[in-house]
Structure formats: C-alpha cells, structure tokens
Image (cartoon, rainbow, N blue to C red; front, side, top):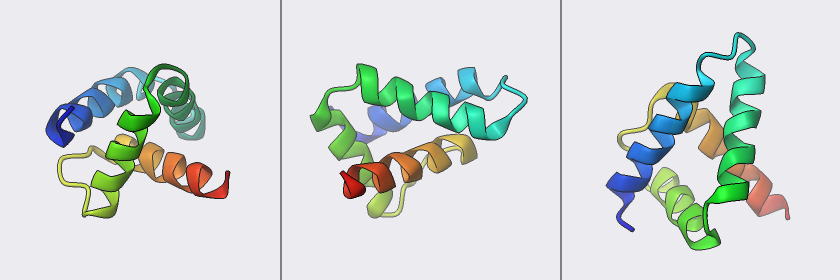
Length: 75
C-alpha cells in the first residue's frame, strides 16, 4: 500500500479519536487500533514514512505514529 493511502487512513482514525476529550487517551486508542487491525507491513510502512519526514499527518496522527514507532523499537 502506498504511503499516501496509509497517511489518509491514519488521519481518518485520528479524526475518530479526536473526539476523546483526553488527548492521551485518544493517542493510546489510535495506537491500539493500529496495532490490532493493521498488518505489520503497514505499520512498518507508516513508521518509515514518519521517519522520512511524515508529510500529510495531522497532529494527532503524527503523535500516535510517533508513539507507535517508539513502542515498536522498544519491542
């Protein structure tokens, strides 16, 4: 899947979790969603896109993918 489509999907997920009044819970919910429902290859691609500059991410999506990246590297 291309990075542009993954970014669009991440931003769509972020739009859903943006309704949570607690930003940290929204980020955690988004990370959990991606870890449960995205294939490992998709997760690697979105993290690689972030590492390459992360064009197109909204603020919440960028924060969630950053956390996802940190967790993946710690595992």
